Image 1: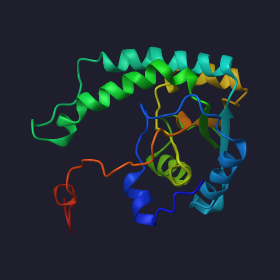
Image 2 (image 1 turned 90 degrees about the vertical axis):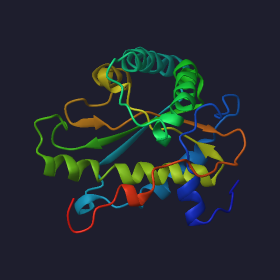
Image 3 (image 1 turned 180 degrees about the vertical axis):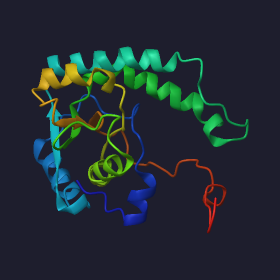
Length: 217
């Protein structure tokens, strides 16, 4: 099913979906592959196309990955150094809602129909020793494609959420999925499911005028 959204509608209503993921409805492989073909039209540095995509549907493997995610989620949300903003800041007013939905995802992650792990394949890993130029070039060659994938999902009535909290256990997940750890870096973990309803709206964000700089900072 195509929703028939125009470009602006897709760009402004593609949300991080958690509570509205339909855990009971199967996701067809052909729909995912159609979205992936669209995502692969995204720009990639020097046309390297060093991306690889791992999709997981096996319940046992999903449970292992979700358990890593959950344990790291608990550590992350228990940190005392959470960022603080003004009382009227949308990042403050929206925090209870965001935390509630993220806790929900933490509890049901293993039940999502499909998990996706996008990967960057290269000569070595993107560890902290890689200079800024190399980091920016590599991430810039995978992140646009992942976002395009999420936009394509949205147009077809599916949703996802960008998560990274399995990555403290990236090696263990690599071993579980036979991902070559020495040359392939995982970029995130994405639940994929049809959404309960399709009426997603604009998010509350800070205005661009508060975040932009012209000629100098």
